Length: 209
Image 1 (cartoon, rainbow, N blue to C red):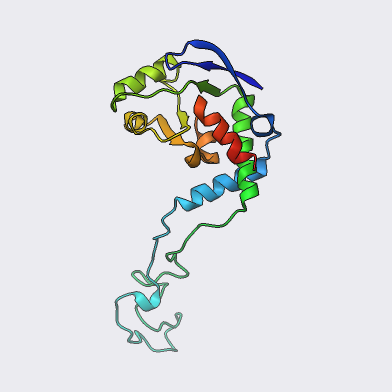
Image 2 (cartoon, rainbow, N blue to C red):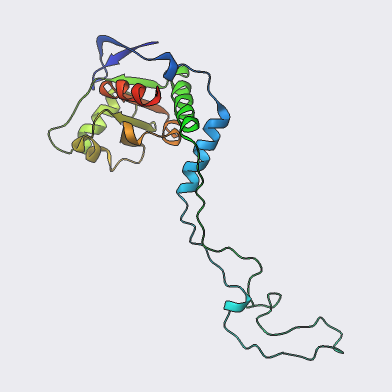
């Protein structure tokens, strides 16, 4: 499929870039996308939650009443989980939520996400640009020129560009990543995907393996 190339002022350069159908025009695999997004979100969890069990609660271990004859349930100590201030039964403990996925499935998920963006016409190709120095105002002007000032956008760079990255860092609705940082969740979470021209060949090379 062919997509026209825009400059950072939002004007048509008159050139077009050929996007590989094997990467940007496949039949999306929804289950692969689900698993990849699930893994990404699971990896963001710290897993530091903790509640005290019966053995960890501070309190006396004295038997608070006799075993029989009270007409109520037996109780061994004030740390009984059924009492206020007692331990928690089967409470959460620190653990890792991460799980593994094979490379082919993750590759399929990324291609599916890219294909969805292309199919919905939410993919833009912009010629490579840079700034002389980090400047948020310059990046905002680029967003306005592309009609993205009120939309959540993801810019994908072919190579690391510190000035462009730092210029976008203060903006909540826009983020900048390199091709090596591209992931399924980031693609789907953005309303518009902006590929810099230099990133297209790298993405296709990475996902065509």
